[in-house]
Length: 249
Image 1 (spheres, rainbow, N blue to C red):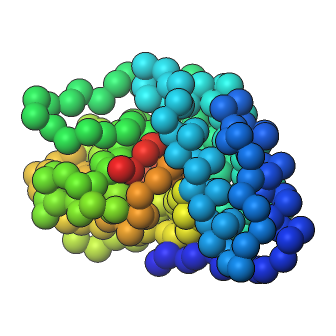
Image 2 (image 1 turned 180 degrees about the vertical axis):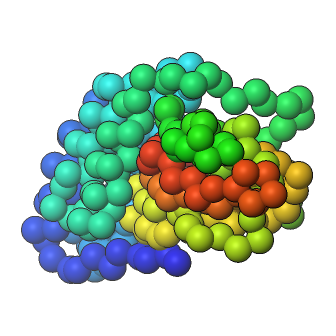
């Protein structure tokens, strides 16, 4: 499900865009003059701000934006012309991104597509055999990419989540995991539910989904859980939320 913000017309809204450009460290030189299409001006300026952020975004060893970069993003979205739904997603996501990175890095195979790892830690108690905790490994794949199958088209983003140490997925899921995402370049947002797409059929339990995010700077929050097969000590595993910031080109 994807929603698009349709800005209203008016010179006051264009004036607020000029203010937004000054609130990021590498802001634009100035806002466009009022034109016959203020909505298009709004879209173009928001896209320029997000593109400028993504091109200079300082990240740590896990690919997470630094504190200074997170502040720049918040300055940009805390403008009156940014939809409240997008502001909520970004605020929640950046709160999770500030996690301390416990749990280790995901081991990436050779010739794998570019990925953006979600913030650590995320875990579910009593997930393995009903008694032990499982650490969740989550990452985003910006398109175009050949993996995960059947592939990710240009302008799309795939989200993959694995419950480490578990067996295969149960045929019937008693809970669900979803990703709420916002594109700061085109001011769209949506929710993508992850499901069984045939990854790791013998375990560990892995779910994925593809979102039509469009190109731009994406902020996403993952939350929910999955159900593992009963013949492997199945359980309903609810994981702590986590988040990611990445660029789709």
